[in-house]
Length: 441
Image 1: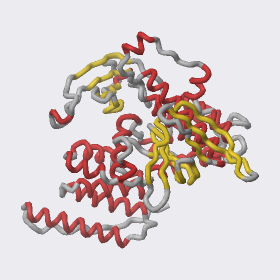
Image 2: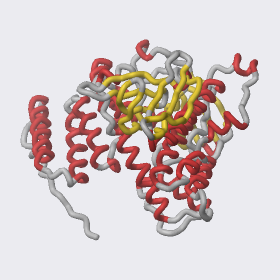
Image 3: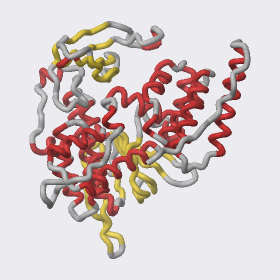
Image 4: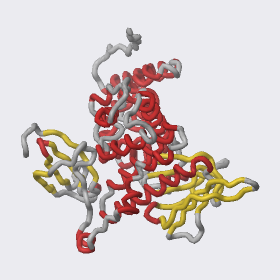
């Protein structure tokens, strides 16, 4: 089918290239784009995204970094395909401290920055074939399903995809039909978009860490801490209380959890499914009448708790990221299947909880005392990669000591010429797998 073409007439250049004239031109260009954006119907999201892109570039040329970030953030809501991830990352990395402070005080910009910087550290950069991903039209056996999930960009790890296949084929032949795949994929994308649109008030954000994001919200529920929505981040559970001014009530940091139970509470003639969470730091047990959501949240909290314990025991923060991926996959499985076996199916993805109960991975005392931090250069790869060479380059642990990118780094040369760079001040991945040809280094 033919694509519709829209034309935007940029202001003409008919002046000498002097600072004042160029400044006026950018202002005129910005105003033209703002007028176009304000007059465009909201359903024309593709064109709207391109206007936001242009206006963000103009703001960038004017040195108005916050305005540029706001426009790039709007692209996420209109057409994610043209979102300039690398450009936004560079803006954030070079932003003066005063402007970064202002950005962090705006909930939507703080979330954008957190997401982009997290992606740089922990997620594989999306390949071209992911951008052109198409939903399958035929039934899939395991190998084809693995390929399709990897192409979709949802997850790369083969073992996780195998568990996802088992979850989606519970009670049926070991093949997945196109409709089930489509329902799962659409639910994953919808919940991903919903999580990105969670807009927390500043009074709530100030309780969270810098790169902490809400990945899932429950429905409005009654708890012994008040009425509100349970929020899940990569570090904790908290209650987003309802009313005139939404508030924050801490439920539990995952490392602080002592016990989790799914039970029922009598109300009149009914038995209401209730989640109970006991923590080490509070005498009072948290109780939430989650009703139909109770079984799923029970799985989610147990998996995050087990993942955090594993991360602490092995000094490897990537375990908590894997646990988070597992619970988001559980959520999508439950949303896609909509049958009586959905919770059993979702439990197939509770990898860390099962590990904790079946084969506890004990770390020897000498190892625990010696090991300071465990890193995995193969994170996000399809298969684990052997490390051929390690190179440490010194720098400054405190970024305020020297401007620019002066942190110490650990360079890991993997098979076939791939290189992964870790920021040795935080042990987060700074650059994920760039290639230096096909020869070993």
